[in-house]
Length: 449
Image (cartoon, rainbow, N blue to C red; front, side, top):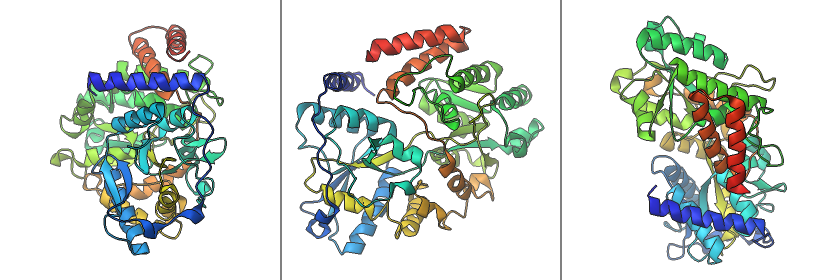
């Protein structure tokens, strides 16, 4: 992100948080009535506009939904239009509109990253339309997904994708060190470190990598045990009393210091570490990372296998399931077509009757797996990717996704994540955990008050 753009975004967000502190934003508007939806009123000259990013993932999935809705209602081509808008640009535009009160440049529907919803819903309660009267059965989506966009029991977005965490390994590298995929299945993170250090000593390859700007493993380790950086009331909990956090931080430091994992300096280097440079023989991340594995060197054809992620060992609620990344569709309350926009989502991504057809399409057009139960029940997940041989990876992910634990969230997610990353860096360098967490709490308080 360019400095000028980053500065503008930070200024806008500072204004947003100031409004929260003084109770700004006003009362939430009434939920659009499903009876007011009028698909026949849509036209190419006055289309329903959708903002989305990623031409290989979110955009084709939305286009599949549009094609379905247009065909079902006998609508004119072009009556629902996708405008490409990067994720950072979406946030900047939403914040600018909400702080200025000028919503004229906003679309009818926008994609928004899940962790951003609480920030906007609490800062600007009149920005997104309530889906309370939509007729959508949100209990059919994974609860960890709907929690992100729910306030006071009211849903404000329809989930799109699952970021269900997978663990994928190069079986040829494992074999060179005397291991198989079975040795990597059902293990703790401590065992992962032991195996990873051994693999590194014998092959010179790490079992995973991470981007120095990310620290994603800390967050998906936490969620795998239902843990969080926050308490249930949204207050910060970067303390030694947070048992999953303490274990996750110590594991992360041990991975980096043992050779089991390597730290790289950018996202591009992260992808290259397993896809082209092959310094890393494993990946643990959201299922969307499969496309990067599949796009790797041809020499790796059929040499990858997938299993569940390792578990925390000191937490009773620990599981081998987690989520990393993901987004959902929100309808702007300022839209004159809000009721129709919600009807569109209700009859595509949230439709029990259309689940088999649509989720089959998005799987094949975008490698996208959702968390909508009727779609997951359908027999559409057979098949695999060439890098994984005959392993039916989609069926495995569809089975794991509904088992991801829920965890507490906050509008200050990214602020907490930032200070946690700083604390982890110091822990890796040898500082003690009590000191780095105390500093993290102070840094967080300085940022958010």
